[in-house]
Length: 253
Image (cartoon, rainbow, N blue to C red; front, side):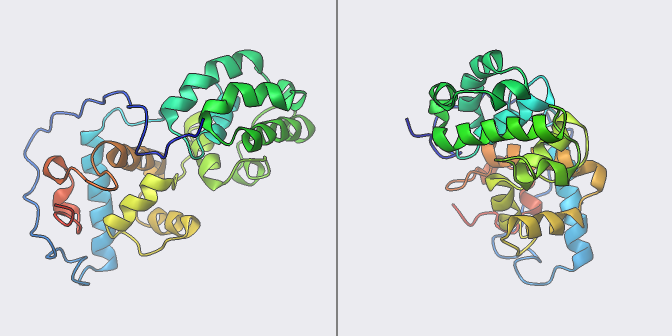
């Protein structure tokens, strides 16, 4: 069963947007934002990025991880499974997976076919099963069966890239990191916060604008915005609370 792309498939739980204490600024006419006209300074862009973060904090006060987990290992596994799959579908298969494989040693000794059968609904089950087994083997061999906190250590685990590593560090260990997933990369481009397209370069560019202590929450807020308001094909510009700060406002109407 093939997993559908992030904007398609099983509906996500409805998130209630916060009641705003005052009306947001009136959006600019399409094409008139300083960023669209090439007139925005680096300082102006940084101030706009931080203003967007503050507005989204009011819009999505409950923004946070949407994968179900109770410890760092479970979050690492769930994030590996979320590649090319919705969090909703991952959450449907992880209860049984976590029950059968509660420790890194269980993954290291697992039969690939057993894992594949459980995670099949997430798609790419053969590759993901190999990643989970390899992850378990590496954790047992190098980290005493525990998920490490250091970014460089996390990146040695099979199936773990920078995005997964930042998800784990930010949500399991409360260490700041910018998670550049599909939604994040799409929105920073639409908001004209950076012209970079490489995920690592996007991460570094935004890290220079957003306060470090806000990195993890900013990632969640922007991802919430991408999933609930600023859809890839038909963004809901009419209800967008950051429309005034969006150079792309009205381009998709």
